[in-house]
Length: 374
Ligand code: FAD
Ligand code: UDP
Image (cartoon, rainbow, N blue to C red):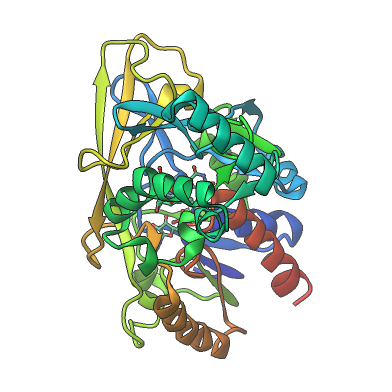
């Protein structure tokens, strides 16, 4: 097949490139995807009970970039949705990110009042702070608080999720979930938080519905790349795999999802409950909270972290620390040598902990700089 662009992977990164190239440049694109569906990890579908589930774990859309939200708004309408997460701490469900409500819930009244005053005095009302920064506080009260939150919320969850201690990971990983000096119980504080009304897969179908875009599912690009004629490739798979692991494999963390459907309308008070200190799973998600779907039954997903084994399971999360970043830079140098022919982008090709909006934003930027004006 002769096309202008061969795109490997049909997640948010690949789909954004395909849409831009087809509609803005009127050029032909072949998207090759090894799974049997479009959407990458954001793929959703109805299960046998008719409940909309996310096959690869709960995906909540949020961004603070008007450019990204308005780009996606061309392909879907949105249902406003503020994601809430509770963590089971010593038998009680407390809001995470840990905030003033969490402080008041877990500590005796007078002590909580002191902590609240100290947080507002030393950090400032409505500010957020990472747990690492809270540890650096000179206030003994805030150091005690940091110890408490670290032990009850981060330490055991992180060990379970990554199979590593927090100090073996880049601080940016647990820094994604800060401590908040306010009563905002939402998981995210982005300006735009919403879910595509008809789900992600319908959003992808709309993005990709163009005569210039041809999609080949169930196909590893290696099976077709030699027979394909294209000017440029956009590669969104794992970068180490592209270069045959010449600098050694980049570590990833994998997951296993166990789904359970119950004859009840709702089971949990919120979409996600985290289990930092108990059980083998890290969190349980109840999809109807996220989708807003009305149904007499409900489906839950239990998330079990797993070691990633190449070729056996899915590389979900890059394991970011100084050593892995250094190894990634070696692959980045390989990528630079072939940059005229191949653009690397996405969570796996950039080896970055992107959320969906960041993946879209990166693709939009690279389209402008490397393809339109390249
Ligand atoms: P992917 O979606 O991974 O797409 C890459 C595609 O390339 C895959 O479909 C893969 O099959 C394909 N591919 C790889 N190699 C080949 C090959 N050799 N040949 C052909 N095809 C290939 N983000 C949020 O914004 N909010 C959330 O709530 C959220 N929750 C998440 C929960 C979990 C459990 C995980 C793992 C991620 C979550 N994310 C969330 C992140 C989100 O999934 C990513 O940001 C997004 O999927 C990145 O898109 P991508 O296109 O770069 O990668
Ligand atoms: N984390 C934690 N306890 C929690 C929630 C998060 O220790 O209750 C840490 C954990 O290391 C996790 C990281 O913060 O991997 C990022 O959390 P996030 O919820 O952003 O993870 P994701 O949704 O990407 O799996």
